[in-house]
Amino acid sequence: MELTAGCGTALVTPFRPDGSVDEQTLYALAQWQIESGIDWLLACGTTAETPTLTDDEWLHVLRIIVEAAAGRVPVWAGCTHNSTREAVARARAAAGIPGITAILSASPYYNKPTQEGLFEHFKAVARAVPLPVVLYNIPSRTGVNIEAATVLRLIEASENIAGVKESSGNLPQITGLITRAPQSFHVYAGDDSMALGVIGVGGAGLVSVTSNEIPAEMAQMVHAALGNDWSTARRLNRKYFRLIEANFWETSPGPVKAVLSMMGKCGEFYRLPMLPVSPTVRARLERVAGELGLLIHAPQPEGDPRLY
Image 1 (cartoon, rainbow, N blue to C red):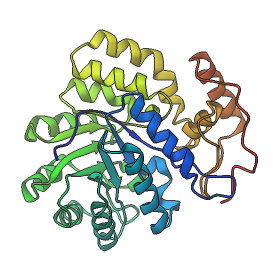
Image 2: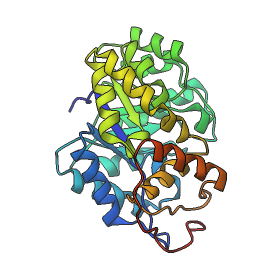
Image 3: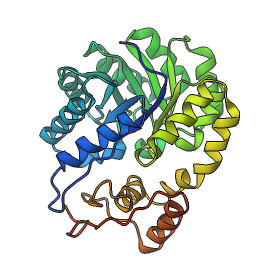
Image 4: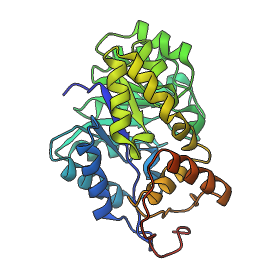
């Protein structure tokens, strides 16, 4: 299956007050995303607090999202680990779930491998599965940048390395990769704030955090840009850029879960080391969300939204 151009959502993982995965809310969130026009779902990415999930929970979350999608949109599985052997095992496990259509894998975190180490790592992941593999370059989280030259080597080495989610914030690097890679290779913006810039130089779309809150609007913005309707794309970007920035006032997914809770979409429950946003940031988030018409007066779940 080829990768899809457009806007995909890196879904949050909702938890119950006791810290367990809230399956019903997760299913409802996935349904809402699809009904809102999102192009694909990313299960168990960074936004999903995946490092805090056990292996069994990780598989459970993947299966819930696949069930909710019911073949209507592609579902990508986040399969990141700082051990190549474990990343390969996760990729194989995800590929064995009918309905998973692609594997997303970030650079090994903490290890800070060389470019050659990255090359061998991703080559091993790609050769272990029959699905398209999307690299995830996010140096701010992993401590290492996947250079464009390394991506190009990987494209040559493994035909199923089909795309990259680029969160380096380095537009010249991203532009250089797009201009040198085969046209079939998909380069996605991994930062909502970079979406129009990346699409403008030939990118295939966006893997979004903000679409957790406004899936229809983010999908419309990305589709407009991909369709060369820059007036609409810029208008939507201008309208929602405050929210895009607000989602990173503290470490993600703290702000996006806070806003989703204000919207009545899920409880604001995390697992350590993630904590609720500070009171100051919460007040600012509420103001931005309110001005955009996102808030409802919904009862808040009981329980301490921390320490699980």
